[in-house]
Length: 150
Image 1 (cartoon, rainbow, N blue to C red):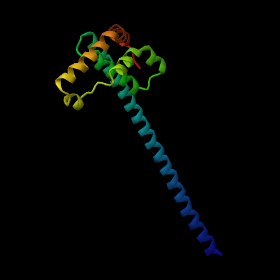
Image 2: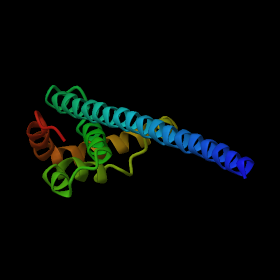
Image 3: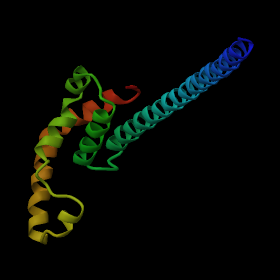
Image 4: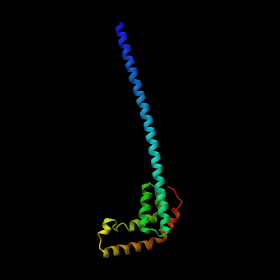
């Protein structure tokens, strides 16, 4: 009987120790998860700030004629999309999206390099025609987006 009680006490002590280890592991996991979530949130905030800063730089560059309206529209609309902005924001700055859509058929990068000079001129004229159509709208959108944060 004494041996039985001794065995029960030893098993209870082992079980208690294992329960305590599980408790410590859960606590450690919770701390690690909280740390990861905080780091992830900080990373998301930093990324959002970087994207917003990029939008501001592009909008300013439009007014300084440092890049084409098409390039600005492609980049700004893409950055807004990456921020998953509300549809009202997309509507407010639809000029960027519209010009991007109108010029989406124009090849770029390597595909552009593979075009003949005549084909490049044709696409350039097409791009310039669309930019002329959307000039006032894109310039206005670029002005209105300055100072905004999404």
